[in-house]
Image (cartoon, rainbow, N blue to C red; front, top):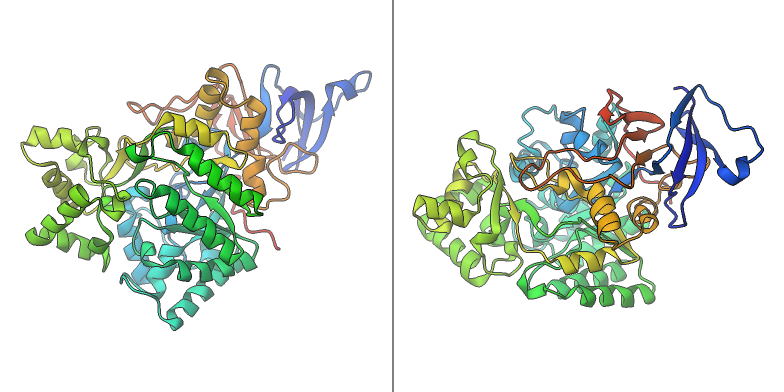
Length: 536
């Protein structure tokens, strides 16, 4: 690995402090020297085997995606430009309580079926792991960018309890504690939950608190997708704050939005709740994506009782006319817990992807639009898609509010997370555009954040949450995970119409001191590795 000097860069170092001009020397994957312009006056400038002229470019730490769904994509797609081209040098996987470790043969098959819409079927993956440690070892064979992992609580419950909606027995709770402890010992940075997804949502707070105590004992954090982002959203946030306080566990709120009509303009209430908890000594952070629509699977909209027993049981219920009618009533009239307690408006549900290419005609339209074309009810269309695609469809849910997005991203504990689902013909543009969207739209165009503030949100703050002692800042001795971008042109290329378009204005990205993006093109470097929990 040759020594590199990056000359005349405008360094935004991740601390939030003003930018400065400097030459930065990288060697053996580390930043070994930073020579500021003032200090270099009259002095010999650093030399290296290779030079990069960074005139007009900002040099910052690599961006950390605090909420990624690339669990299989990093193994399937060596290129992985969806993230590398954004300047992402570290992703946090294992989100929303559902991922692929720890598993056994039974639960691996169930997880694969449950989150096909997030990650694909996995038919092209050799699942040669079962434990968290084995999955991290698999990442260590070489991936495009670095990855950390959260133990998925729903997968743990699936393994220890199954798909039943009931309290865990004392023996089952002990088993879950052991699984969480093993995952933390093997390098996980914390635990996630998906409390509107089954089977994780069947866990009551007392059970979650016990698991969070284990996470806390290893210095990890709890990352819940909490029980509602719609009706009762503030109460759901408050529940997580109280749970983490009771467990003595750090809390990171996943995709912390205030969505649906019932929450329009209510972001200040959430921020007041967080400020009061922080003032009382709580350790809380959050992540958001800089867009208004959400993204998930169509099956996630169903009530939790319809999921009991696992994916095959869901399909049987959908096939039964009487049970299907009951599901429809919960979704459209009552407001199912899968849809955050809000009665469904099918005009807000856009199909973004299907597993069966024969259903491609539905992609890009709302369920209501497709139903109108077919001359049937929206529920009939949704049911048809779920059954024919075996629960595979992904959706965009157009329920967000711009004023809430901007208010939350300004908060002092905010970090960036794409929540990027890479599957489907028309994925959410956040998968390819979150980080340049922050820098282009919300810094340069709207001025919601200063450049220095925004870079801190995307680098040092998440590194601090992950307790990474040598990432997230441009500092001597730190790892050379770095991004060079043009502040005048950086922008998300992805749109709702063309979501897989790569960003502009990010010519260079380094992982471990090696170029993964050079002159705007992906190299063949696979410098990414698993980033394991630092010892307490």
